Image 1 (spheres, helix red, strand yellow):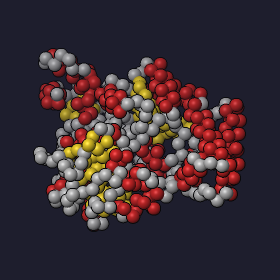
Image 2 (image 1 turned 30 degrees about the vertical axis):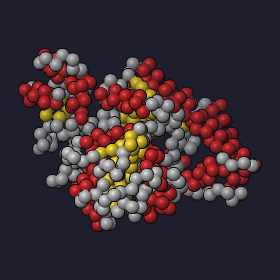
Image 3 (image 1 turned 120 degrees about the vertical axis):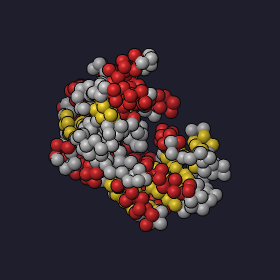
Image 4 (image 1 turned 45 degrees about the horizontal axis):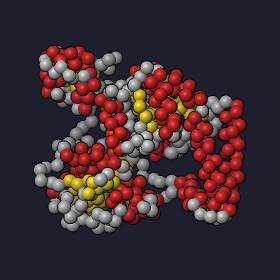
Length: 489
């Protein structure tokens, strides 16, 4: 349908999606919908340009068009952004081993594809390691569009039986790849997407030492338990290239963005319960630390040790389980407070003006409640979470991508890797202290918009709690984006 849309805009530029739909129907495409038209307009960055109106009026964007709010990033002869070419060169200098750490939305997947093509051209095989089925299918779609004929691609996991004894490329979900993939040819490559996930005791078994070429891709390599130092650095080598918000904004490879903080307050009863839970956690933490059985820092190591203790027997295990129970109660209190429900209602204008919006919550129940709340505001909304089947999750994402669903609410399933380029608004209701999680969530809306739209990121937090940035929440995330906010330029 892209050719028909191009022809319609060449005859008469400046049409809305609805007007284009009517033109196409008049030309005999009677079943075409507005969502179909928008999918074409937004799926081909650089080919179409909106004027920023509401609704936008679309025209063809020529390769020399610089009338938008920011010029397009430079692309070299190999189709790479400048930063991608620099990262690839840095990886080459390190003997084709290393980690590329780049904020989400800047194009890490494209870098991995080019490295894969290099290894295939050198006679090697390629394994792409991913943490989820959704990412597996996403990589499969990308590779299908660039691999030459005759290259066999297999999937391992989600009922796939990819095998390097038969296939040239295997895209493997990590929990299916543990100790099962060994290259059969020289110059073979392992690409580890979201590589920070592979330092756990089970996932690191998927990092076969038999791959001479190794490329780790992540937005945030550092793990709170120190696993990036203990396990990832020895396997991949050091980080060979970093791409932060400042460079991404300067190069124009991400959307312009704004970040807003929206504080809310507990009721008196909620505050009393929060303080009680926090004090009891503090007492238990002291007991657990004095036992010598848990590490004090980093916080991820402490929680990892507490979780391990909780699976054991004895008095200390009871204390560990009590600590985890109190922590869960506190998370639920922060997640379920009516103050955040009221805040989401107050954001109905932002939701309505967005092209697509994401709402991040702490729990499945909160995601389902948020989607119901948004529907009550008159917008289409769905929740997506781990209790849905993979097929159902993909269906939700498809409806979201087409515009049939305007708002998608999720606890964690959208945090990493999933490509939702149409989204331009993210509202965080979750109790998050993690820089990684905030970076990943912001990345869901940072991909460049064909019409130059701003990406908006709203953090709703309860004042004077562990969510409050004044108390160290978000681990430096706000410091990293400060100065890159579009209002600061």
